[in-house]
Structure formats: structure tokens, C-alpha cells
Amino acid sequence: MKDIVRVGIVGSKFAADFHCDSYSRNPFARVVAVAAIDNLEAISKKWNIPDTYLDYREMLARKDIDLVSVCVPNFLHREVVLAAARAGKDILCEKPLATEVEHGREMLEAVAKAGVKLFYGEDWVFCPSLRRVEAVIAEGAIGEVLYVKAKECHNGTHSPFAKKKETCGGGSLMHLGIHPVGWVLHLLGKEGANKVVEVTGVCNNGGADNYVHKDNTGEDFGLGVMKFADGRRAFVEGNYITVGGMDDKVEIYGTEGLIKVDLTHSSNVSVYSRPGYSYCIEKADHCLGWTSPAVDEFHGLGYVDELAYAVDCVRRNVMPKYGVSGALGLACLEILKAMYRSSEEGRTLRGTWG
Image 1 (cartoon, helix red, strand yellow):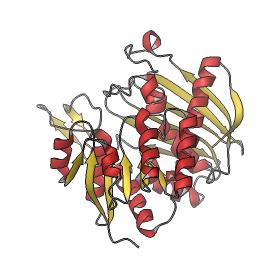
Image 2 (cartoon, helix red, strand yellow; image 1 turned 45 degrees about the vertical axis):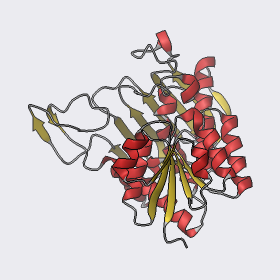
Image 3 (tube, one colour; image 1 turned 90 degrees about the horizontal axis):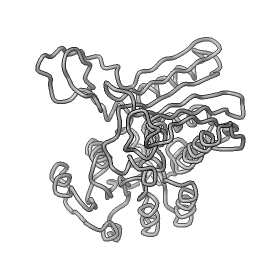
Image 4 (cartoon, one colour; image 1 turned 60 degrees about the vertical axis):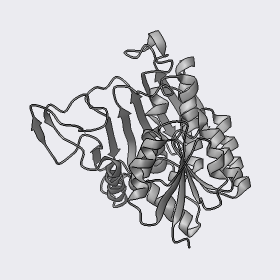
């Protein structure tokens, strides 16, 4: 077993920052290098990262790096993961796995050939609230689960890459709805054995067809319905038209009860402020009047435990479970692309996904 997992991060903005935060809390992880084309000085200084690289390939050549966090824009995931696999590194790739299904399949083939691990960044699988929900369900508290509703929504991305369909892989459904899709697959998919057999999607078409974000080439509103082989269904949503801060909610309906979860507006702290303060929750427009500030957002959304799990697997040299594997990432990508196709064609698609 490794004493310390040495991490190299590719990327330097939002995702890289919360990866650094999570690794900094882990006594068995050490971020030794970061590679990016900008913001290097700021992120290396903030997190005391000793070595920086403008070319991530130079970083991957280091023999002392065990795990690579891929935190670049979506369209670059494929090339970084393939390079890291060739370098013999274990990899944690942020969502989505790729922008095209064929790229995702190529990535899984590459890591299998190289004999390295590919972790997929689905933080909801490690969210403390949702892990508690799974335990309650396992006790039989709501009987047999019949139907799940889940959404992630906010008022729009600031990333120029996420605003473009070609660099994001889609719009709000790909950028945000991918979390509900991934978690539902984790909850109902039975480790990939219970396949999705029907997919329906309804999305705006981007540009002038969007409700609010006319400059986005991807949709600013999207929803989908998934039917599993065992008959259960899930409704997922991702939109950029929700004001008031990021809104993540889950509802689970069973034969003997139901569960409702508010992941982002459920703080046990209440603040009333006339002048406002610096930060409440992600995507909140202001912090005036009554607000409920997040206590530990990165932990509450699952990031800290997600990365701790990856570090532990690398230390013990074990493969990731389905819910944080490249296989789940590929399944999410296949399902979301099917939702887009369903929306474009105006019909429910039948097949096998997941």
C-alpha cells in the first residue's frame, strides 16, 4: 500500500480549485504539480503546489505522480485522459467523461489497455445526504422504489466553453443534468445490470430558441425521462433559468413512503443581513436579507469524499466501484446524447443504455 498518493492536476480554474481543497484535507494525498495555460501562479500559491507546467505532457512524464486529476474544459478530457493512460497514470476525470460517445469509448479502451484506473467525477454518489438516503432505502423505510425525480439547476454558466455546444457536448442538460443522471444510474442501475431501455428528452434548441441565454449555442433548459428494464422510471432536469442560487433537489417515491432531499438550500444556518456578506451558496446573486449560507459546500456536495475514495483505491490498488467508474461516465454520456436525439426527433427512443 502506498503511504502517500502524489497528485498532478491538469487545469487551474473552478474544478481544479475544489480538487485541491479536497486533496488538502486528505493525509494520504499530496498535490505535487499543476499544469495549465493560465492561472498557474494563483492556484499554485493558494494551495502551495511546488511545481507548475504550461504543458501537461511534461508533468505526465514525471515518474513520481500516481494520480492525475483532469479538470480542463469538457472537449479536452479525451486528449488528457489518453495521454495520462499512455503515461501509466491512474486518472480522475471530471464530468462529463467526454463530449462525444465514441470518445468516451476510446478512453475506456485506452485505460483498459494501459492497465490503469479511470475514476469518473460524480460527486453526488458521495454526497452525505444522499448516502444517508441510500441507507434509509436499504432499511425498507419507503418500501420498493418506484420513481425518482432529480435536478440540478442555476442561472447560467460563466465558462465560455460551457456556453458552446461543441466544447461542452451539449447545454444545461449535459452540464448540470448529468449529475442527476449519474446518481440515478448509481441508485437504480444495480451496478450496471439494470439497463435503461427507454429515453425521452425535451430541450430548448440553443441560441434564439433559449428562454434566457440567447448567446449559448447549447440549450438553457432540458429535461429527460429514463425507464429502466425493471420498469422503474426517473425524471431528470438541468436548466440555466433558475435564479436564487444553485438548486439541487431529489425526490424518491416508494410503495410505503417517500423521501425529499434539498442538497443546496438546506443549511442549518440562517443569516439576516442588510449590507450583505461575501458568499452564501454557489450562483447566488446576492447575500442580502434572509439567507442560508452553506457550511461546507465541497463536503456537502460530495467532492471531499469522492476524491478521498479515489485516493484510497490508488493506495490499495483496487478498481473503482461502478458509481465512480469510467463505465458510469460513459453510460451517462450515452443516455444524455439519447435525450438530445429524442428531443430533436420528437419521440421516445428505445434501446439499451447503462
